[in-house]
Image (cartoon, rainbow, N blue to C red; front, side, top):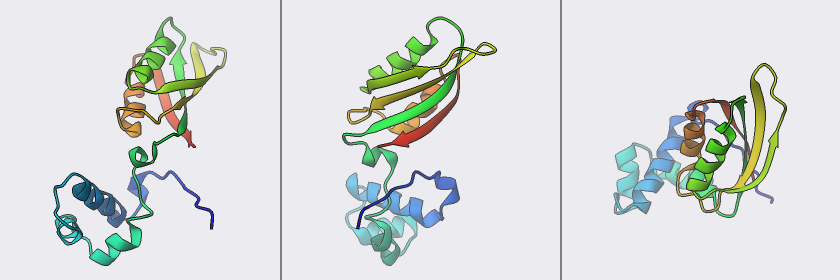
Length: 145
């Protein structure tokens, strides 16, 4: 059976899903000695952990040899797109494509795709930080391949 994935904001999922991810992280970082200890710390049953452990991942767990597409709006001013691209490069993202529309009312829509297989930051944090760059707004994750 072919695996299919969805990217979903965690605030719409049951709390147990996030707790499974936290339990996995506790185990990976040596903060829990075994599954029993990890599930006790986060407050879920072992059966819940085993049911979901192989099906729930953070974006950072799925970033090996993958591409991400994001879109955002830029204020029409010199250097803003360069700031975004420089930030992605500083986090070891490798640019693949750029598409920028003509500015309308002082704003331009931009879509970029980059290789995230070597990112040295979690994808969700990278996207948040792009939104903090002066002149950038409406940053959205479009696709992860």
